[in-house]
Structures are given as structure tokens and as C-alpha cells.
Image 1 (tube, helix red, strand yellow):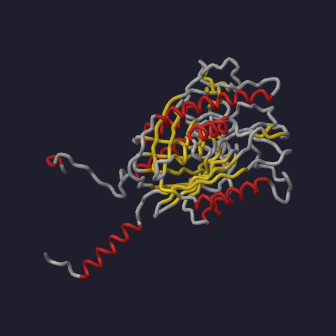
Image 2 (cartoon, one colour):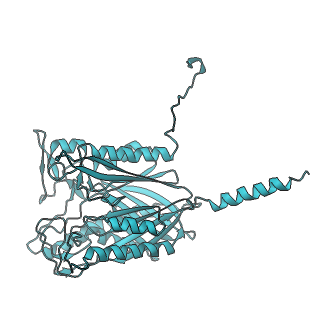
Length: 433
């Protein structure tokens, strides 16, 4: 047997070493921090929100990190209604994180981040939250484990479309629905992503669903995570072994919960919050039960991100900045994010256009330090009007479709489906010109 020259052996050794070092196997990290404010501030999401006088359940921020040898992303999911932070986007990058997403569950019973004098002008609660999230990102970086991904879906309608279409073609906003009429259309999809480690122990359960957390209504004066908090506690108790559950709000811009009691005593409304969270939790546990164990390490993660500027819908001289990020996991799971309050149709568009086995649409999620862009309606809803479709929007009509198409394009690019130069696929050589 001929021996290879030493020069070739050395070259092979270097190539193999680089291949091992640049392995794309995915590690995941998690951390959680309490962001419950002191009493006396305001909640957000309603005009004239009452001053808080109690804490029904704590609000938290959860950090999920996904990392390969090539790149990393940190996602902060907060029990807040409307929150973005240029400071956090800058500081998280300084920790060596390549991409940062700041998402909100959109609970209307969380603290307002727009109070510059609460609890003091010297240090608003917003800065305390920012500092705690940054520390949690650093902690999550230390808690990495080899991640195996599994995804499955189910259906459960807990919401209705609050923009009720009229025969004349316009829409009328129904904030309350005492008869619990399941006005449509809605997206009832419940998407569950499970992350296990090398021992097949469940470490994280990510639940994606689209419905406003507004069961408690505008008279509530108690801090609460709403139904996402009930869901998380139920899943963590049901799975056990210190597994953590993260709720990812979808395209809930036009979807209200069917359970809006508006009792004479607001404290009684928490029973309905528990019911809604429990119904969703039961569905998630059912989905988890039918998931199979994943053999082999998850080994592919790619991330693309883009920020654009569009015209203001109503003020000609103004513009609005928004961004979209796309994640592709194992070539099979596509995640697209959108800031502000996107409508539910974008979730359906993503599933229809991504051509992937599994998709997740994450709304209320900013990929840069730009101002909160308000509602992002689909084109048809914008034409019909109503709350969130007309009077409370900033971005030009069609911006949501533009962002969604950018997100899908990023997924195509990561799969090599969009080439960087013109080309023609010729199947019959006789037809070649």
C-alpha cells in the first residue's frame, strides 16, 4: 500500500480539524428574570389605564439563545405590551451575540415602559428591566446545552376577529363580544417546538399562538402575565424535570379572546384568564404527547435579518422603520419575525409561501432599536378599516406584505433556492436557444 506524502497528510489533517471546529451543531441556552414592577405605576394597552394596586402574578423576561460555531441569536420574550430598546440591542451585541430579537407577549396587565418618572425620574422602571434582561442574556450564554428540535401543531379557537365585516364592505370594531360569537377569520393554529438535550430530557417548550392577552380588560389594576402566564406554569408542571415554557405571540393584531368577561368586580375576571390558559395548555400537552424522540443532533441553523424604511401612511414627510428576521433550523423549520402588531393573515401567508414542513410567525418582535411601529395590517384589512387597520397605523399600506415577502425570500436564500445571478433551467436540450 502506497503511503501519502507528508504534505498531503498535513493538508488533510488541517481540513478535518477545520471541519470539526466549524460544525454547525446547535446549542441552546435559557435564562429567566423577574421584571415585576413596584406598585403605583400604570399598565399599558388601554387609554387611561388605572394605577396598579396589586400583583396577581409576576411578569418575567425569558431569554432563549441558539448558537452554532458560525453564528448566534438571542431572543428576549417579555411579559410586556409594547417595548423596544435601542440600548439593549446595542449592549446585547457587545456580549458577542450576532443577532438580537426583543419580543413581547403583549399582556395588557404588564407595566408600561413609557413612564419616564416611575418609580423615579433618576431611574425609570424601563432601565431596570433593560439591565435585568442584559444580565439574563449573559446568564443564558453560560447555560448552553446540545439541542434537538421537534415541532408539531394542533388547532384551537380561543379568539375572534374583532374587525367584523359588514355587508357594505367596511369593518366595525368589536372590542367586546359578550355573546362569544366566533367572528372570523382567525388562525387557530397552535405550534409547539420542543427542545431536548442529549439525554432526551425536555429542556424548553416554545408555544406559538395568536390572540390578544386582554381577558382582564381596562379596569384591571393588578399586574399579571395574563393567559400566557397560566399556560407556562401548566406546561412546566406537566412536563416536569425543570423544563421551561416560552410563549411566543403570533399575529394577534386583529384577534381578541372569546373570553372577555368584564365583570363588575375585575378581580373575578382572573378565573377566565385561568380558563383560557388552561384550555391552551391542555392542547399543548396533547401535542407534546404525540411528539416522537428526535434521533441525531440538530445540526443546521441560519439567520438572516433586514431593516427597511417605508413611507408613513398618513404623514407625507415622515417615515417608519421596521425589520424582519428569518431563522431556518435543520432546513425544515422556518421562523419569521415582524415588529409592531401584525395581523393574523401573515401567519397563513408564511405557511402557504415558505414551502417548509414547519413555520412559526413571531409578532411584536423587533430586530433593531427603532421606535415601536404600531399596527401592521394586511392589505385587505387596511381597505376595510377599523381599529388597528386604519386609525392606529403608521406604516404605509402594504408594508406587512412587503415584510412577509422579505422574510420568505430570506428563507429561500438560506435554502439556496434564489441564485445570485441569472440562470435558465433547460430540461430539453433541443429547446435550448
